[in-house]
Length: 140
Image 1: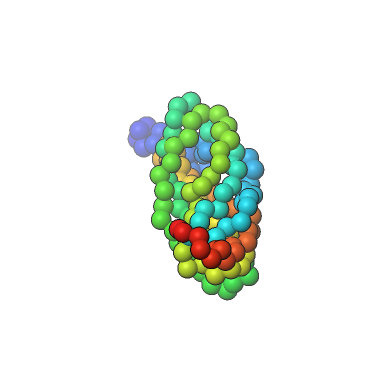
Image 2 (image 1 turned 90 degrees about the vertical axis):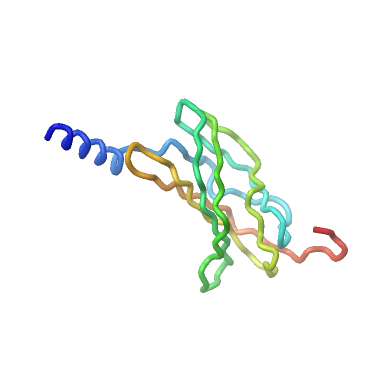
């Protein structure tokens, strides 16, 4: 009975009180420069980890058109690592799909963080940014 009470207590702690070790300081992430269909949406990010060692996590991503009444386009998940402390970086992982028409878009995502007993989700997003037509003669 003591073991069951201990495990239930740990689960309740993990589900309701445990904070994920990953957090972002500059959200939504600003996208700099022009973005072309098939090209990266480059963003400076400040990613922080309160863990004492290098940690791995998975992030899911979607691509959403501003003002559209349509579901966001799901993109492949990515596995990433983060060192302890706050780590400024330039993110180049978000690529506008090749068939993107000119307009305003953003990327949305969730980082899945393994806790003691549950998986926590940390939301992230970019600002809306403009996707412009690729100049003629550019090679992919």
